[in-house]
View 1 (cartoon, rainbow, N blue to C red):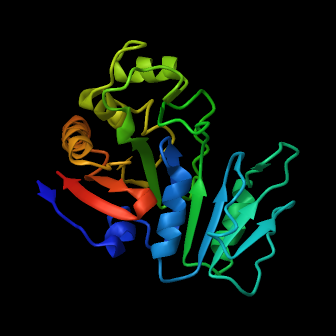
View 2 (cartoon, rainbow, N blue to C red):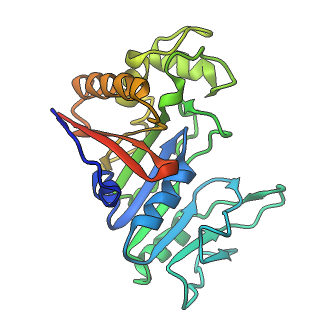
Length: 251
């Protein structure tokens, strides 16, 4: 069944991101989702990653702390604090090790730790590579992300990170227009969105549901994914740039 949940405040609850450690994987708005969840959370929130990523937006966090060992120093002030590892790559920040992130979790300074657990080179859809994702073994929730912008678009490198891997997991052919069933297969696949999630709760997110046409196709993809696996109980449809929850599709 489908439950309409229009309130922005319900985003964190719908995605299982109210407390603990939440890892985001996939493509199509992981970082935007982290910012939206941090903005909507009432408590203190830490942002970080297990891989390289673009620099944090200084307007959306209260502080950025560079961590070069496994004992991050937590600033006394700031509600939303980003933690990054050093890197020589321009305009990027490095990821943190699992021990460093465990130290943040155990510090008692944060109600929620949001972790970007793979990269997608700003594409809208991806399937994990051989050594991805780097989901933390102590993650409470994993949010696989995909963009509704891929519906009707040809599967190529313009929208997909590793399009050949996406094709292998979804059954689509290269240059084929992606449909609801393709996204559903990605979300439900053990070598797709479910790779490396361990025992964590899984709540897939179809992002960029910006209009009625995308909403209709995204809802169908969510229903097909739920029918294909028992690993998760709901799929969230949202437009994270606007911090807008569109719908929660449940079994």
